[in-house]
Amino acid sequence: MSYTQIAFFALACATALDLYLLRTRLLLRKAFWTSYSIILPFQLLTNWWLTSRNIVMYDRHQILGPRLASAPLEDLAFGFALILGVLALWVFWGRRGIGRPNGISGTPDIKRGK
Image 1 (spheres, rainbow, N blue to C red):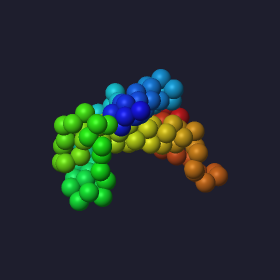
Image 2: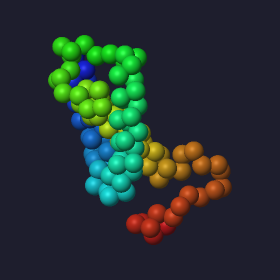
Image 3: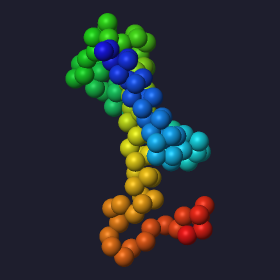
């Protein structure tokens, strides 16, 4: 399986996780896109640093070819999938109180009126 296939499979899995499995629907929220726009420059900077110094190298036969900040475009898809997946799980578990000390309630869920 090529890196391209893995990256787009991860993107499809993260999208399904967000929209259908956990139903966090982060992709439909302006706050998610705002936070991703803050994360993206750091992802590009990190990708550039790692790939321009040959710390991370890609087989040219395993990627599409176009690069951004010296990293393959697939890195953006893979990074996006990782961010979306982690944030979807964070929201999902946060709604269920996982990770909160006993007796401490979280932020009220305005949508449900709790």
